[in-house]
Amino acid sequence: MVFRLTLDGHTHEVTIVRRRPHLVISIDGREHEIDQVADVGDGRRVLGIARHSVAFARAGFHDRQIVRLAGRTFEVGMVDPFAGEAGGAGPQDAIKAPMPGAVVDVHREVGDKVVRGEPILTIESMKLQMVLSAPRDGVVAKILRSSGTTFEKDEVVAMLEPQDV
Image 1: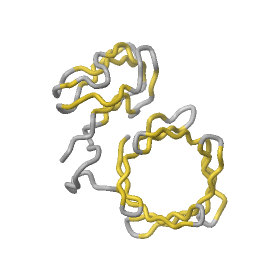
Image 2: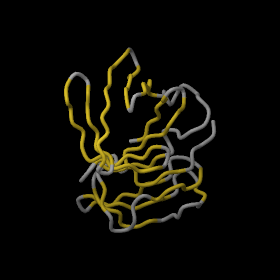
Image 3: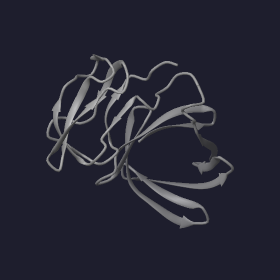
Image 4: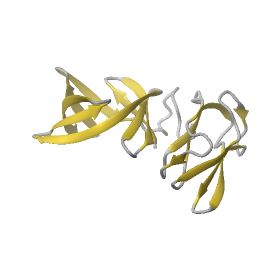
């Protein structure tokens, strides 16, 4: 799953890389493993990131979230991908697995130019093989799974370079 958030007026791309055995998210291309999320009451929570505990408080306000972290307050909101905001990754930059399975073959490498419909990866799930193709013309930015590795449903397995709007 790929989405964009605004944090104090700056847009960041957030990708759920995998969910098991621990949640791994990518924020602007940098991966973070989430060890735990614990509710400590009154909107306060503790988040475990790379075995470090981070305490924060969160409250909803209309379409925004207000987050208090390390003595600072941040306003966070979702970015509508259809609002026409320039730059950043769009909904067709991520190539996601439609079901859990394993990678059978990798057809492209990082840096390869691709045309919409060209194969990127072949995956297998319950003895059914499926080709995951480029959703648009572009350049392969990341191949996140190699041949023989497994993945979960909706996990991002490859990324195209963000398309300028």
